[in-house]
Amino acid sequence: MNTTRKHTRTPIEVPTPLVPSAQRSQHRVTTTMTLLLFFALGSTVALAGSGGIRNGAIQGVVYDETGSALAGVSVVAVRETDPPIIRSTATDAQGQYFLQDMYLGNWVLGFSKFGFKTLDTTSGDPANRTALGDQVRVFIWTGQLVTAPAINLQPEFSSKQAQVSLEVIDGTSGLPVTHATVVSGTSSVFRAGADDRYALDVLIRFDEAGGLIPTRISIMAEGFMPSTVELPIGASDTPVPLNATLDPTLITLVGQVRLPSPSTGAEYDSIRVQIINLDPGLTQGTVRDFGLYSLRAPSSTTQQVREYDLQFTAPGFRPTHRGGVRTPEVGSLTILPEIVMERDPEETPEPNPEP
Image 1 (cartoon, rainbow, N blue to C red):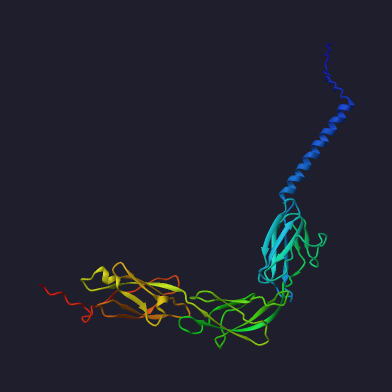
Image 2 (cartoon, rainbow, N blue to C red; image 1 turned 90 degrees about the horizontal axis):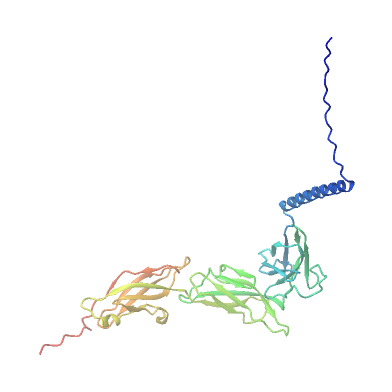
C-alpha cells in the first residue's frame, strides 16, 4: 500500500518592525499639520479668488443754504493714514457726488465752492462722524457703499436777490442779439424774451462790513467776442435795467484785384480796399504781391447773415465796388472772385512829348 504524503507550505510571517510610541505620535502630528496647511491654503486661494478685501465707495449730496441742490462743489476725501490717500470729485447738476476705489478705513470729507464757506478735512472734532460739526468722517468696510450725511454749505457772505433786465446789442449793426447765453453765478438764461431783453435773477453778495461785492454778468453768443458787465447797484426789488454791447468775431476775406497792363508794383501798392459803412480801423484791408488782398470783416452766424459792399481805390484808377459780399461763419474761409480795376482817363498822366 502506497502512501502519498502531502506537504503544506506555511506562509512565512515577516514581523512588523516595532516603532516606538514617540515616533508614532510624531508621525500623526506631522500628518495632521500637513492636512491643516493644505486646507488653510485652499481657503486662502478660495478667498482670494472671490475678491478678498474689496474697495468700497462713498456717495452723497450737497445743498445750499436754501436746500437747493448745489452743483460744481469740489469734494475731497482723505484717508487717515500716513501718508494719506486722497480721492476727489465734484457734484453734478443734482448736487450728487460719487467716490469710488475707496480703501478700507476711516475717510475724512471736505467740500468747497466759490462763494460758500469751505468745509475742510482738517478742522473740527476728529471724533465727529456727522455733517453737524466742522468735519465729516465715514468708515469704509470691504466692498461697502457708504452714503455720507447730506451737506448744506453756507454762503461766505450775506446776500440778496436782484432782478436784472439786460439788453444785448450787436456792436456792428446796432440790432439786438437775442440768442446769447447770459450767466451770473448759478443763474443763466439762453434766449431773450419778446421784448428782446434777458430777464435774470442775480445773487448780490455783501462783505462783512456790508459793502457790495462786485457782481458780474457774463455774456456769450455765437459770432461774437465774450463780454462781461458789472451790476452797478445793490439788490433791488425792481428789475435793474442794463445794456451790453458785443463786438463781432472777425474773419478774413481774401481775393485778387488786377490792374490793366502795363502796371507797376508801385501802382499795386497804392490800392486800398475797405468795407463801406464800417469803421475803417475795424475792416482795414491790405494789398500785396501784385493784387492779392485780405480783409477783416464781422462773421456771419447761424442766426444772422452779414453782407457788405467792398470798395477798391487807387490813384489813377476808377473806384471799383463789389456789393453783396457775404461773410462766412467762424472757422470758414471765403475766396472772392477777381476784381479788375480800370484806369481813369482824367487822372492818367499824359506821356512826356518827345524832344
